[in-house]
Image (spheres, rainbow, N blue to C red):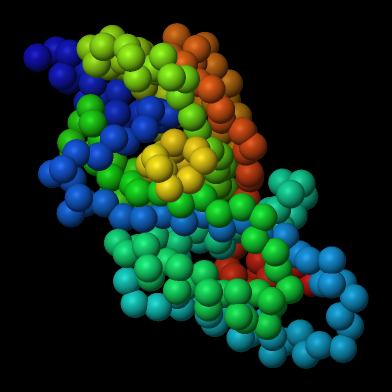
Length: 248
């Protein structure tokens, strides 16, 4: 059973391998939504608004997303990502609740002046390789300051590789990721509902650590089965009032 133990160790490390959900894992899964916003062209032309009131109303909606929805974080992306100013990460067992939250944000005073430039949606569940392991947000681990989120697609050949060989490759990959224990990994499935197959969200308080880990993992043999892992969006987690103040 050494291979099983190695697989379990691998899963505890950082990994780009998707968390394929089994039928038994549905009770330990949740939808994750990553909404990326940019200020619209009208944003800086509106000088006569009551900023304090509009900011307060918008922040109230985002910070209180409603029943069965959890705000994992709001992130300022200005200067960190060229095509996004604000990232909102929300989690819910019900996709309908997440959509209701998105509608509520869209109707806020500042939300009406934002353009959603990307919406990544997927389901996070327990791992195919270790049924006790899953994304950090599923396990209840506290969010960290920096978020790196991107779409992920495997090559078609990956799905034709025998399971034991895929497992071997991911064990190697995961052992390399274990060198960076501070990083939280979150991988969710998007098969059939969005263009990408998976969404990868990495969290750490030190962006330099994110750089070192991802650079290290480029040397993993399994890397040759990666088809898409860009664009990458980076955000800094702050109280929502501070994130909105950055937009002013």
